[in-house]
Image (cartoon, rainbow, N blue to C red; front, side, top):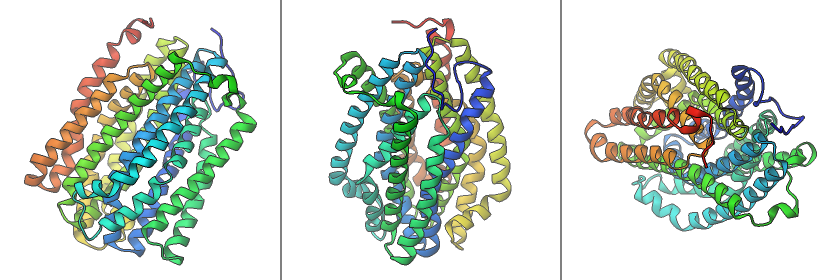
Length: 454
């Protein structure tokens, strides 16, 4: 088998012990996820402590819309990087450069379309979500400032995804740490000194991530030149563009449909009052930290399976998936213990609120949902594995299941059971999703036989 080598790779995913390789690759991804989350969490802490519960609720109400718009673009970026990882695995340098060139073209088109679209639909969409009148203007200010520069967010995630595709998960972390520190400094300056309100938090996020993009581009230009396409690599290749567009749109629509469900769920939450919204916002921010280990292994599975699929090494893929499942069991246990003892304190510290409704609802959410991470420990690696071996429809169908489930909860169960229905909504839906994805992955012809069809 022909193998491409990249001397600045943090780990070789094509050879050696599977679990060791995955963990070494996942550790920087874990810390990357932590620092990525710090972008929005510092916004939450500073806004909650300086601007109050109403501003915090506004950011929470805007979060679902922001995630919807960003999720699609970032899903497309991850899908494009998957194809690059496959070309790296099969040892084809020219095809790798062509995949990067097409990723740039497709990425520019997608982000331009979203940037224009958001100008027309953002405020009406917040109204459709039944965002309370007393916070809708602040919600719009926050999310519109960020989505105006969605190209910056996409550029970083694409650059980081391409570096991970060739085995380097360390340098994206380095750049993210630097930009996260800058984000905290700018948050404090814009909000507490310039009194820019929620717009200041959005501006800090955009500027800080822009710095990380510049750092990534400089590094690729100096140390990862195999990722730099030449003019000839931009020549139209129908088969490649079709494959990359299909893969990118598959992951983009998967993410978009999932976040659409989150936006619909936010509609149900918005009817419960701003104190409930504030408590749920703080709890969801904390829950995102609980998801960090899961996110790290998901990204590891995506790159690992993509590279080894390109290399035709099915046995390594099977071992990798089993390692990912075991990892999910261990991390779920740790998260559950932490939330059992520390959930109320964490919600209070993050939100800055002394309202019992905020603290009690947030803590209850975390204590119930944390043990259910075991389901996500099966669900998300399996979905990533399917996408990495070229399955485009089944992962999208799983997100449709999630969307339909959240619509049913919002329409039927939340009006009757209030916040308790919000708490149990996602864990119940996850069970239905895993019932679809697990058999689909392990019964896939390639996974069963090691033979790539077509």
